[in-house]
Amino acid sequence: MGGIDPTARVSEASKIAADAEIGPFCVVGPDVELGAGVRLVSHVSVTGVTSIGAGTVVYPFASLGTPPQSVKYRGTPTRLTVGSKCDIREGVTINTGTEDGGGITTIADRCFLMAGAHVGHDCRVGNDVVLANGTMLGGHVHVGDYAVFGGGVKVHQFVHIGESAMVAGGAGVAADVIPFGYAYGYRGHLAGLNIVGMKRRGFTRADMQRMRQVYRDLFSNKGVFRERLAEMIAQYAADPLIGRIISFVQGRGDRPLMMAADSVPGEADAP
Image 1 (cartoon, rainbow, N blue to C red):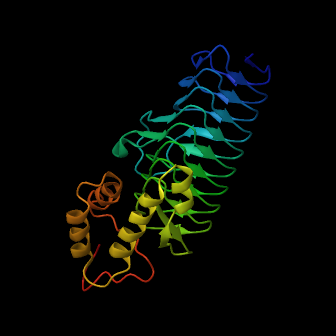
Image 2 (cartoon, helix red, strand yellow; image 1 turned 30 degrees about the horizontal axis):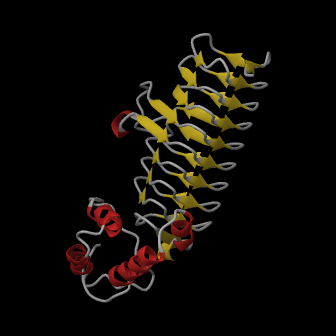
């Protein structure tokens, strides 16, 4: 199949797979590459240095590859890469990267971006991520594989969201969310673990019991957070599943970590 509707405006310099389909009134810029089986339904704008992987479908009024919404952007032709088999619904906007942020925004494979979602400059979105309607990722946000966002979620710039985390609809996220964490509330806090997501990925009952115990020990006990973390490291040094949480917490640098509403970090203890 494939083909270009006569009402579309497609640059002769673009690279379009033979079976890609470009529907009515789409606009495709000169530095765009569309992989095999890509389908732009209609009224889609793809510009900038943008590549879209095989089998991805983009719905009307989505805008991909526009310049970063950043006052620090200096006009360099930075990039956007979208992976294969993504579903990008109506009105989604995704910007390219900035010079100071690595120069690229990345959406990996099999992601589902629902209507009105926005992915800011220099974001890194992993595989099998779901952004429900109206979700907004600020610049430089990193999202792990299998993370799920409810409608209207707002994620502050530079925040990292761990793999298989779930962020409830309407939440505001201003701090890193641990892998498998469940973030909830207008001013987001941890409210437990994404057990449903773990079941869907095939984790065992023993895995989930261990994760629950680690969550309670790390976020629900009194005392100094750093000391509780050190105990977790000593106890679970050989556990690859728990190690994902430990590595995430240890590797976050100066970024704040989202805590549970009832946790007590301890005296002057920035987690």
